[in-house]
Image (cartoon, rainbow, N blue to C red; front, side, top):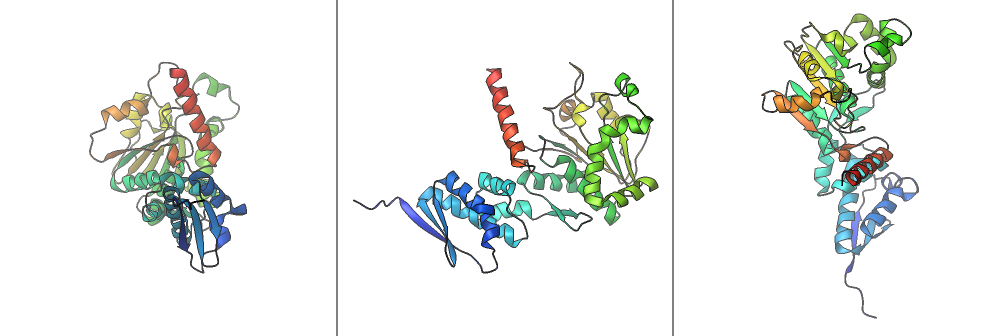
Length: 324
């Protein structure tokens, strides 16, 4: 029987300081995924990793593993989310590593908050270069968490004097009035995701002190009317649930030495039927204004549990099927 010349072997040297268990993952899940994806066989040899398969698949698998190694050397762990992102976007190992190498800040536990996708890297660069940035994308792309991390970093460096976190209370009005408690207790449920991100980055005690001093403020959007916010880092979350009038009101609160990040997902608008979203309208109005940037994150930027990306895929397929 003639030898199959289409099958090749590629050896990737592995430094002694690379832990095979970290590279391969629990139960070799990372390599099993690559074998399935690229139709190759991967084996750990004493001084290298050997990939056998057709040339195209073997080369893609080799580039992916090289990217894994580069990330491990930079202190990153190769979990399922990271492994899938690298595999989905592999063009060159060096290019992939660049998406992961920006540390935004450190949490109170000393854990680095880093960009994990090209879209997130573009997002943080846009914030550095502009006064107002609109970040749009599906759940799990890190829109709010990265905004919070950048705000905390600027606050700790002394670039701003306070952080102001804002959310629209979509249910404001009659339903809000029926909730028990005082006004703070009524609006807190709408602001809870912002508190959760703050606690994760700064710790509950530090956040409590800053809230008491007023250097961090968490408030519903209605509280912004009539104010001018100087030397502040302002984040408007869930902006798809603002009206065009509310969006204009918020954007005109920006004072000297301030920066604003507006986050939202235009596929999850909870406004009453036929009510226009301020996040949709503002893209047409401010698209050419200097100092303002629009960043669109996609499902490839999802960094939550990988099932979130699969859920987004399923909903997109369902929507496409039902539009036909």
